[in-house]
Length: 375
Image (cartoon, rainbow, N blue to C red; front, top):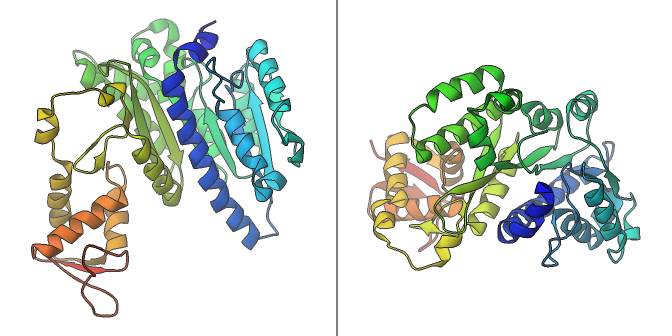
């Protein structure tokens, strides 16, 4: 019942979530397929796995993520030949509806591998199965109603293999309530880790709602990173009034290129930016008139200037090197770095020159430009 209500009530958020996932799948698939073509001795398949797939459409008729992924694949010959699509929903009504929707997609039979729809509870057995397999390059999407079935082991069981990235929808409201609920202690430990869940519970005592959110999301991101070299990127969803957080979409990759691609996608789906720095948030209230004082006080572009001048004082690097060394776990996108470095160059705070010993062209700042930070 709760899962079915979701497909009635979350139309706007779900559309943004689905757009982010579908856009990432499109770019990710192109990157993986290009690599496969260079190494034909390796697997020439890619997979999309969604363990909480839902019925296929929302009540307003909008396609949900599974149908968007398949429709996209049908339009591209390389994907037609390579895509292995696996969907699951423990609600038999949803899984049957999804099967029917998939069968009605125009051109669905042009896919070399018929999409598979399962009807299983997500738990220990599925985790063990993934852990024992060598997966082909896979984009793994996990979108549970609450938290049951979502665990660090589940995410890591897929991420262990080459070319595999994960995206999951993190129900902040449910998990925030569950942290202090002994009845769901095992679920919280599965999500954060046993010791980390206990430590988090202690950290959250007497914290306000804003502090709680920052701590919970940070702890989850650190738990994901603890399994190896990982890039983790959260995107927040606010409720209709923009006062409370409802969900976070969490992206996890072992590759900086994947992190960069998703960061650009999430930045474009953000409903607000400050000084050109994206919020990484979908907030319906951003479409309403609002007071701007707080946004004027928060000046992330100016903060980036100070960060770069302090971090790289006396060093000589290319624009690309500066971006890669500073970018991870910040809200900044590549354009922010180019704009900041251009301003610093124009006001004489840095020196800059091209590999051909020429100054940067006016109003641009290329990746190859060599920057010298003054001591």
